Image (cartoon, rainbow, N blue to C red; front, top):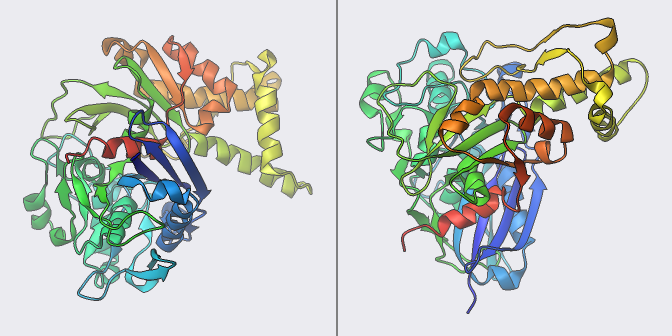
Length: 467
């Protein structure tokens, strides 16, 4: 009998699911939904929170839309999602953060809102440099930054301790979804996601428990660590036709899964531009140290005991979207209403023409960077003749790639024997100007393949799980 793997990607702005066959990993069916889950933060514009129940509802809906005859043959489930973020929930005895709703010989999982916190995402900026200077330096090769789970938890302990009192579990949104599906009393977390939280020693595969405990950190709330080739648990009940007892892998990072589904050879680098922007490649023979490395290139656990080298910019498609929203607001201020889709269409059209090339310099780091949190955006070389809309947008696109190139220069790729760049992410695939800038800066061919889907990567990752 044919068997299939289900992959789920719980992303920053959407949930995507797919079913792949176990023979050649081709996608047999897929579905996606924008979550629109952002909610106001009590810290103002510096905070970034999402509604957990909205995200879980999107997961339920997406899986329910897949063909039933394929769901009934799913033999493993792999789940990945946005990294770094943290949420809290309650699981004490019968007091769970979710409930099981019976539905036509299957079940649906609903969130009990009063027993979960919001998801504090990777875009949360409450941990400013002044605050980060007051907490201990990690015993890890990875530095700490705002938006990292352990940094956010430190902030909560010191500034909102009352919000933590009713919770006894913490994890990424991926870990929470897995805890629901497997009915886990204590969440489990992969070394991939643990590394993204901070205070995790990749050499020892453990949290910095002694260091954290000495600083008043609630270490009991930290998840149990498992390698990425291990199972987190088994499906507690039949779910939209997927058999009860189906093994579910530990939660993966979305970047790792995107790379896994994209790479065709070890000499490929992967460039993703969606909400943010990342360029990455598999770094063979990398050995982590015990102290934070002060570099814009970081090394995160991958699969099969490998690491990926990654330059992760906080400024990607979100910076371009900020520009579009600004233009839309300006037109409203002038008494006109223009849909964002029309603005995007015009910007892309105007910027493709060679007449849009100018000496205007835009530094689009309006969100700062993890290695330079105080960075801001700027514009230089403004002249009477370079203020056309196409010229400004082209300079913005060039600046976005210049920033990423400054984080991982072409020499780094040359030393790693990278021979081509594989692109993915809608922010790149729909923008010819960005594509031209990639090839100008890195002097390597840019190709697009059928891969790049993190949901597919999650399904491929669970294929690597030890039986």
